[in-house]
Length: 95
Picture 1 (cartoon, rainbow, N blue to C red):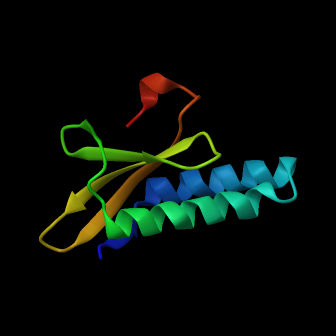
Picture 2: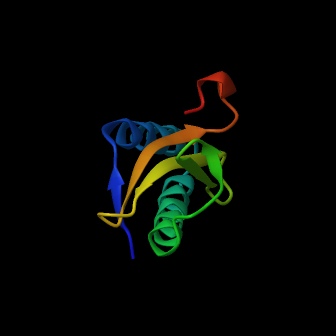
Picture 3: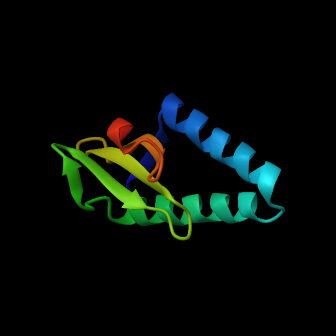
C-alpha cells in the first residue's frame, strides 16, 4: 500500500470545503470527510488512476463536486495529494 501525504494547499482546500458544508448542512461535513477517506483508501491501494497532465493523476469524490489531484512516488511508495479541487469552480485554475 502507498502512504498518502497531503500538501498544505490541499489541507486548506479541504478545510474550506468543510467550513462551507458546516454552514449549509448538518450531515454534509461528515459525508464529505467519509468520501475523502474512501478515496484515500482507493488511492493507497491502487494509485494508478487516469493521468490528467504529465505525471499528475486525478480521482473524483463520490457525491461531491471535488477531485483529488496527485502524484506518485514509486520509490518511496507515497502519493502526494496536490489539490482537492472543486470541479465546477474556475476550471481554468484546475491543477
